[in-house]
Image (tube, rainbow, N blue to C red; front, side, top):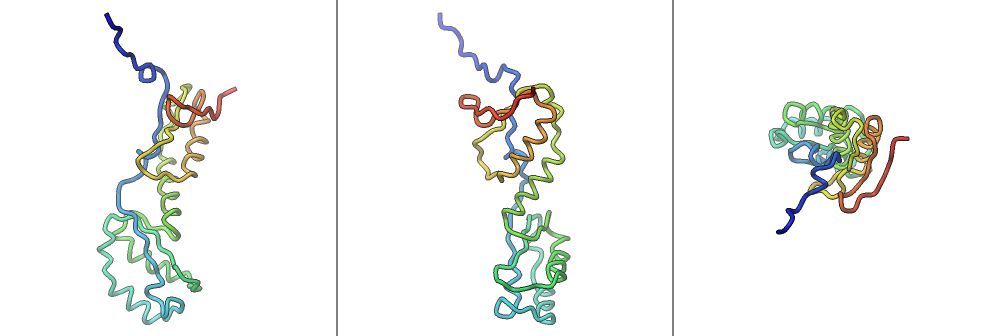
Length: 168
């Protein structure tokens, strides 16, 4: 008579955290201000404001938007603020910078809300492989949060864990 296969990982006290599950759902969009500049470099206020007023902002409904300028233009601070004010009623989040900046911001905010109490005095595995791209900084922030409560922390998968930290 064969013994049933037992999943010892599932039965252990090991808690697994998959950062990809914290990523908010929604389109990520990069909005380049250079499209509204004269030759992509010079901000002419009247023309810039006309472009801003006639742009279809509804296309960013529920998007996460990274506002940037792809050229070496020197922009006054109000230009980005004006664009952000138009995006605010539609976008879920607006940041100035790259899509990487946007992802870092989204994960930082998610991790600030992440409840670490279920991991108190437990061994924790930070899942390494994921379906979604997770910024490296998010792993660092998660580790810092978990170190306050966990017994020990590893990275990877249960079959190939890399020990990271253990409470003294």
